[in-house]
Length: 83
Image (cartoon, rainbow, N blue to C red; front, side):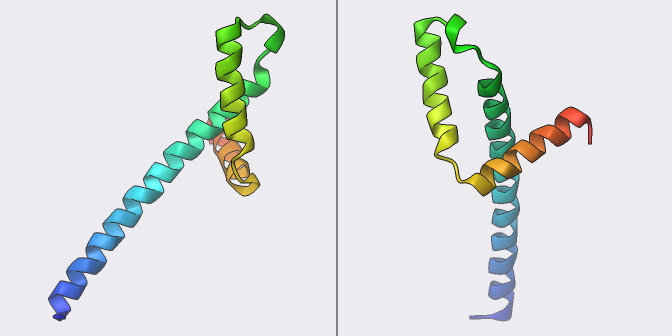
C-alpha cells in the first residue's frame, strides 16, 4: 500500500470519526432532554396514548447504560445553565 493511499485512508477515518462524535453529541442531547422531560411528567394527567408513548420512552431511557445517561444529563444541564 502506498504512503499516499494510507494517508487518504487515515484522513477518511478521521473525518468519519468526527462525524460519529458529532452524532453522538446530538444523540446525548436528545437522550438528556428526553430524560428531563419524562422526569417532569405527571402520569396522572396524561391521556392514555400519551402515557403509552411516555412509558416507551422511559423504557428506552432506562435501558441506556448509566455512564451514557450521565453524559447526556450533563450536556443538558450545561445547556440549561448556558455553559
